[in-house]
Amino acid sequence: MALIRLDHTPQTVGVCLPLYVIVPDPGAMKEVPVRERKLLYLLHGLSDDASAWTRYSSIETVANDYGLVVAMPSVGRSFYADQLNGQRFFTYLTEELPAYLHAVFGLAPSRENTLVAGLSMGGYGAFKTAFRYPERFAAACSLSGALSLDILDNEDDQRVNEFAYVFGDLKKLRGTEHDPIAWLDRATRSPATLPRLFMACGKQDDLFPLNQQFHAACQQRDIPIDYVEEDGKHDWYFWDRHIKRFLSLVLGEPQTG
Image 1: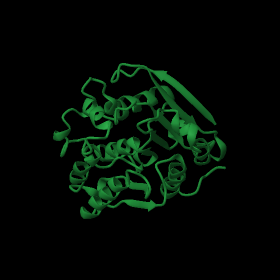
Image 2: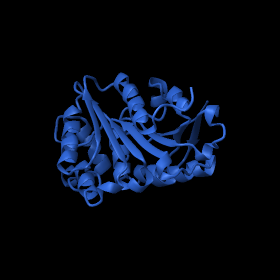
Image 3: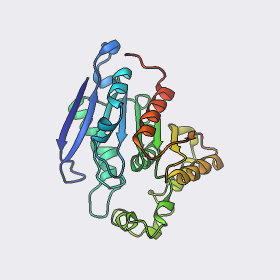
Image 4: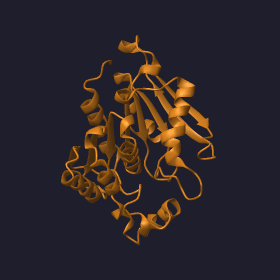
């Protein structure tokens, strides 16, 4: 198994960013070239970077068991958005990064071989990507995701002013491409085209109410989603357990290991 760090400067962002890629050993899948393996885009949270999943979870072992290529980009505290300052992190994630992975590794997997997942801010980014480009992904996973704009309603939260630098006028966000409820409203036009959706959040997590709201909104719109709520905090014990649960749900038992 190889863990590769590439430092590159995307044109969409204009600053050098680390990118981590897990390339599993051939194992039982030695007849399947890397370019034809399943690919997981795995997104970090607000206070992390591309290295977080490899440092704090068992994703390397899990990826090797599945023969799964994992791409972990860095986006700072951008909320995976094209920011007002001109740094286009969402365009990087959805356009430039896939092209880069194709150029460097030959990766261009089909929809059924492409997944996206993330935690907290990354859960928001994973679902935003999946709802905007459902034709690209077989499944999407949000763990403890920031899945409601209600996170911005607390004026005492220090993040509110920070988010204004990302999104602009926060009062105008409702109904825009940044609003999770707007994703669902658009999806109701063709729910059958959505990837399989999985979300999980711990009951002791500060973001638990936002996840309950999003799940309820899915139910109201008859949008199918696998939903897990159980005891747990906003921590790596929960995320490590449930990234395995997501992969087991959509990929079955590992083919190697």
